[in-house]
Length: 144
Image (cartoon, rainbow, N blue to C red):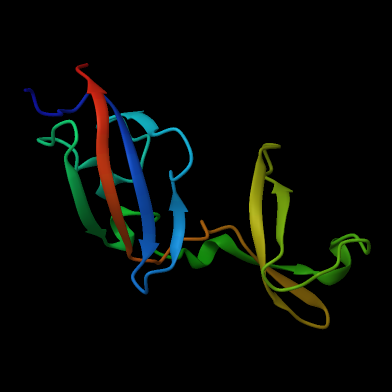
């Protein structure tokens, strides 16, 4: 039986947790996640865990934040005037909003602080700064 290598298309079932055991994502009840190993389609720490594995093999990996969604980037936090947010939006910490970049691209942001005159929005990935753990099983793969 051959082993997985970069360029192979793999299908895995997985559960991703924070270090405290909180599940943030899982393929449970869904089709397996399919991607090409080494193509950058998934977080680097999971991508490098696959080469050398075979079909049916299970693994558990701990992934530091710099190999997951990266550290928190303070430049991605921005204070905006409170009156720049439409009144019909009920502001609360944790609320997800969508803004547009200067190029017109949609960018998800999270309300992280609400002041009297300003609201702090954070465009970091919700898992930025978090070390993660993935338990996964190789369901199948096709040689690239």
